[in-house]
Length: 541
Ligand SMILES: [Zn+2]
Image: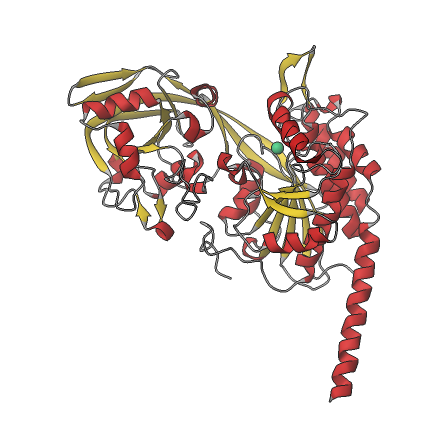
């Protein structure tokens, strides 16, 4: 018996050593020169900033598809790497003020100054007439905290809820309750709209506040008159979505005998119950539509294990097109957002393609469209996946990566959600790197890129990169660079490639995340959500 098991063990070890050697060799084919070539091509001026539906975008996606073909990836479908996504661009115009009746009289709110209104519905005109208003705290239903801000609201189809932005943890040190000052998904404005729709309400108006939203009213105003949606989705959407200024909300509540600041405090408690107001709201909006298609670019490597399980890499190709000129240059090239991400993904694909023995599970490489307008391409993919979404093992995303050279850190955005953190920490050690939580997690970045539609389906995600501890310049320098990046480069024409760009940090991310994908694709289990995560109960498997 002993001899047999020793022989078997030896055989297993030999096989796993061979697999390790194969993976080492495949990983070593990655190069900084390739990363530079891909990045410069995708962020080239001829791609005009890759705004969806533009000629420049068409150039970029055919380049990416051509690279996938050269690498040897299988095309998404029928010989094509394109998964076409129907996109509906809607413009909203409110034809008059928002009228609110209160016990003390009438309020008339100015469009764009004091409110914005929009809707995902396919209707050319939406009229809300004297709908009852109810104050619904943070607009959150979170069983893990015993919180239901809509408890006991009857006839929701006739009511419009007023809700506060962010979540009850905002500004708190108690990390046990709604993750303290780090935003949970319950804090995002998109969640508020989704939950209001699940409640079957007529509408929801989010009360704006600078710190809670993470941006000023000017951002709400600028984005409030046009939005993009996945075309043809049939889910219920409230007829009325919108924002109301803090001042207007405070006046309306005061007329009802309530103090907004006091209500905010009361709303934090799990015992909070919605407050019916002696007020109604009326507003009319006109909607105009523009329907177009834009592709996700998708290729894959079939697993050797004859399974429909998959590991997904993702990096969006789209960007913003033209913007306000800086030094006469108006093309927002999006080199670091997100040509580098696509380059990273293609180079990882090349490594997988170089393996002699392909991993057990399928590896899918997706470069989605319309990330910048609310990750519509990915929203579409998770409803129309190549392999079953519930058998998607994990998603690995890269979005925004400045080219400053090698880093010691692996900063995980969304740290603490799943046991992928531990897996990455173990893999990072081999490269002399360490894992750290994103120090800027209050801004909710985990909910703001392409892995997130997967997360909402219950699929664990890794969204991480080194940039807080540069190997040569250290931490302080890195923090200064990050601040400068957000202020001077992000979403501006200055986001372009330069001869002095250093791709060695991006190459580190190719190595590390090739290893992660390889380990997940060879495995048989699934990564686990941590019990405290708001996504822990979404998918049982
Ligand atoms: Zn991006």
